[in-house]
Length: 235
Image (cartoon, rainbow, N blue to C red; front, side):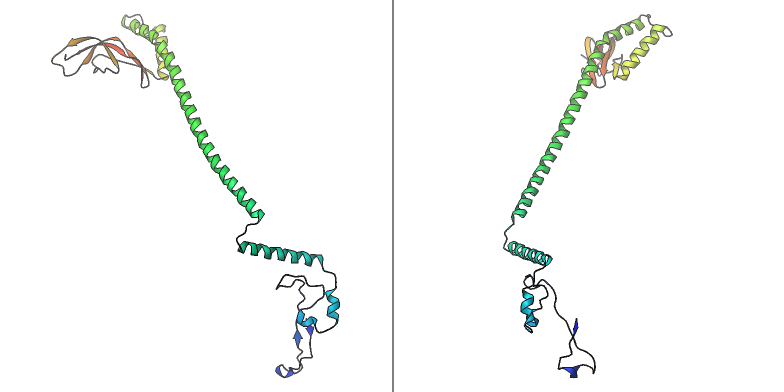
């Protein structure tokens, strides 16, 4: 900022007050982004003296040159964007974004397939485990039949060591889901009972079990052996 006392318009300001003017010293022209030579003034002020011609030949500051180049690149980018033409960098970014989206969708599909496969494997393993336990329990049914016959014939009486061992064996097998079924007086169910004989009773409304030849066994809801029984009921 410099003091300028050459202005003839002194009548419009108080007496004795100096007049100030401002000089644009920006090194990059804001209108077109070109670099102004170091020490140059605007066009309207540079024509006031011969020294302006010498100032235009002064060396250009590298920082100012870089700023002007960036300004020009930004202007060219805005112009290209306005014309709808994508730069190679933007095209590459768009291509990479599409690849990321495609890989994300593929990852979701692979995760879903993994979850389904894991469920199928776990279900198959559980089914195989139940089948193996069922085979072991079915192989022990003959032993349980002998224990039941021993009770009926008085060979296994309460309080004896053998009775305690038999009771513990039945408790252990019961913990694996083995249960005995079939008793006299129960309704006859062909899905659970196998009728070996039938006694006709016209007064009965449904067939019931009158004799248990062999009790039945099941593991949870799976029948390992149906109860072999004699029935009584209508013909």
